[in-house]
Length: 158
Image (cartoon, rainbow, N blue to C red; front, side, top):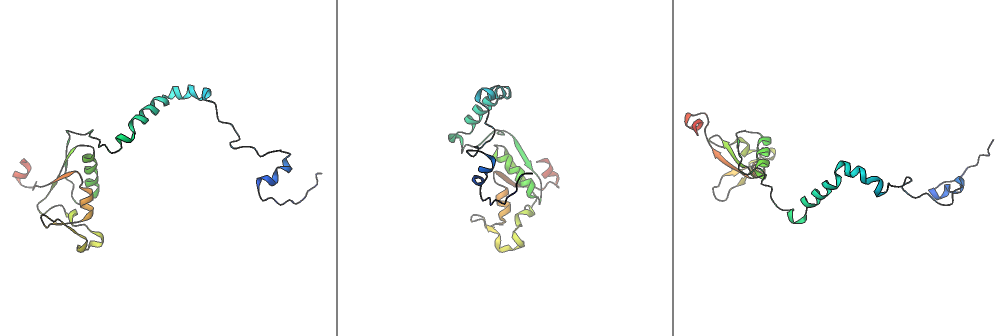
């Protein structure tokens, strides 16, 4: 039977003598594959084409350009009292669509939404004096707001 002895181990270097190794094995233990081994897999997946596309698409010059892929599309936002409707409509507007938010007379009730329902958090429009909540302002970016009473025949015709 092998002799047992207590050994204090504080680091990997303390174990080298026990394993009869002259040096610590470098990381990674398994060497990475060579370029020749990896190339067929990348060609099969068209990874190099993707790399070229990504490099061209994410150039610094294009960093602040606005995507106008939905230019020419008109979106009607008729949701009331829902931040999700306003958020989705603003995303359409961000992509170039013309977004028209239709509100009833008196405006969307979401306009008065403030933290804790406190009126002192309403923002005042300097031109019209109308007060509006910050959530509404943030979520109606890139949209045109129109007041229209869709319950009347004239409003439905419009």
